[in-house]
Image (cartoon, rainbow, N blue to C red):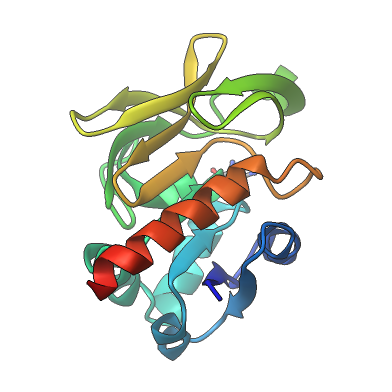
Length: 196
Ligand code: GLN
């Protein structure tokens, strides 16, 4: 069975476990670096990126997370997790993991739109996908190898680059598991490739 970890330092990690299990994989909450050896793919949840970064440093996760991605293992960053994956954050002079070639802006939909829902068409994955946005970032720019999978009001809110997937919304908060199922498929495929 495919085993998917959810980084459990801060944020909405329990809901992701439910969504992973509804998508036919085993979900494991990751609280210690050694646990990264036991999983085939990782979800970095929403929450607060600055708080999560502080905890990543405190528990010495930064390099092990980078190595996890560089081995070719899939990582799905959702909301704050997308900010953690990005190579550039507007208005900041440093990134966190810097694994994905995207420039993001934090809290980018403005105060009047703290949280909202929207129906998205996700290229190759789902139509009328019910997306929940909470103090959401969006993607301002993408590098050459990045495939844009969904936009909302001309803002990029979902993109993929090889084994990396990043979305601005919270796929774990509804019963629509189609995007998590897409990530599970990515992990299945990478597991076959990495084994051969
Ligand atoms: N605004 C948060 C941040 O900058 C992200 C919000 C979320 O993950 N729901 O980290």
